[in-house]
Image (cartoon, rainbow, N blue to C red; front, side, top):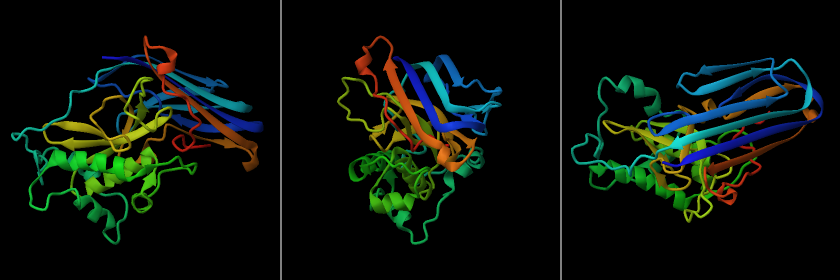
Length: 310
């Protein structure tokens, strides 16, 4: 069970001192039986007038900062050390109720899964539904794992990862038509496709660990990352990373889960001043395996798209 240290620094720069509105910070890892937080510290400069922690509707940790002074820079530095115990390779047995698709969710669980089964984005011409159905066998039933792994690896192979500097996550139909996008775009595409098959899926924001000697060829490292959780009867929430073709939570560190990507923005806030006051935002992230040499860390990058800029 590797111990990882995650250093995440975001700095906003302005042409002259500006005032700051409320900022919401979602950078604290989400603990569970497979992830234990050993230490976490959030430092903010200038020091906020108030900083309070809440749990949002999904149980994620959110820090809310308010300010009473002006400054030319605003810096957030999150440092977390976690014990990461990835689950064993995911597998279903013929005795599991979700071994074959279609399957039914338990009557007691389904009301709590409705929001994750219901599509959130339009598909007026059925393009997304048609794309999702291509992962079904011609002769039903289809092994559920074949659908999930097929879609995960299908996006990895057929879609091109590209950095976008526009804010937000693009519509799943745009991702489908362009055959390109960011990790957030790929996650949303897979989520909406699965929902059209009646499979509960939700969005995950976090980090990916890219070992220095890794031959996996991961993309999305050095920045916040995004992937998918799927709920299956008796198996629970299982993680799939369509950007890198990962099934399970190997090298993935959760920070937040949500129904929609807009509910899991790592850092979001406003400043009070003229539009031309904003100069730039720099993000530097390193995910280091404790005990490894520094060059085994995931390189820090200048990443704008996942930060909820200004």
